[in-house]
Length: 203
Image 1: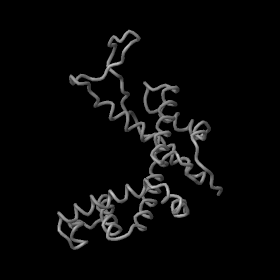
Image 2 (image 1 turned 180 degrees about the horizontal axis):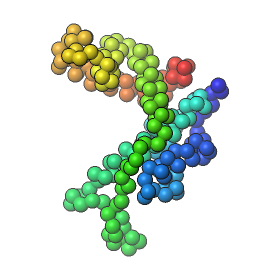
Image 3 (image 1 turned 45 degrees about the horizontal axis):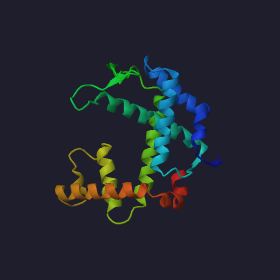
Image 4 (image 1 turned 90 degrees about the vertical axis):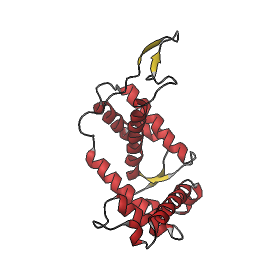
């Protein structure tokens, strides 16, 4: 399968419309233009986290980017539900004269999540990809994060403590997890690392 550079323009075609359609179906209060705007903005934010560098992707991974945009939209919507001004009141929309009009309407999530099978598959693919990244880490972080991901995924045997597997104290385990998660974030933010390990990420 061909490897192509991902660009925002790819969001204007069929895959982009699929995500927009999912957003519209998700809520009765979300029309097509607004869903289109959310999808475009979310995808651009994802690109910005990678420094707007042209990232090489297999065409089959374009679905992942669009689904990520959808998840980012849901996260923004959940966060907006809790927004308050300095006086603790819900944020409000304003008319052209600056007069407060109505509280910002955030549509509720209704019904089953669209494309559930696709989301589940992408989640598994994402976890597998993260596992490959962790396997390339140096020092004790590879072992620490492997145990940590097993713990978070519920894969440890009942009654088994993660720090016991590593033969360290609970406090030391928490410190190592925090340090290694920071190292992992720093690693994923390096554009040079993605260029050097492109084959690993696309395998």
